[in-house]
Length: 148
Image (cartoon, rainbow, N blue to C red):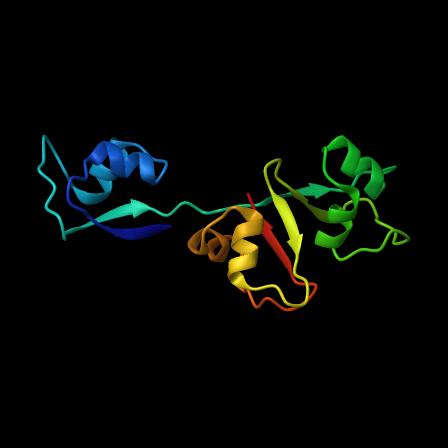
């Protein structure tokens, strides 16, 4: 997956590569750049689109339960249930797939009266970061918002 980046005044290939968590060689190959190049502000580069993944998939094994999965993955039990749409008394079965949040993922449940500003303050994220992680952000009570 790729996206287009508009070069800003003072940008270098190294800075752009760092911004998109890639290498200068990758950017060079994607754009057919050889040798030293002077980047022109306002022109465009193709860069890898970093896919923001908040979860990984776990395949339930015989003998697993949500509590042990949460404990083994150092994840909050209630958060794990909520992410997977389960109640504490629901059964899980071998070969069933569940989502496990990555270590740095946090969750906030929207309360009545929350605003984008109050959520930004609470999560210490900016608008772009929140909407990137939560593309369907409606701020309805009980909606779950993920942040880092």
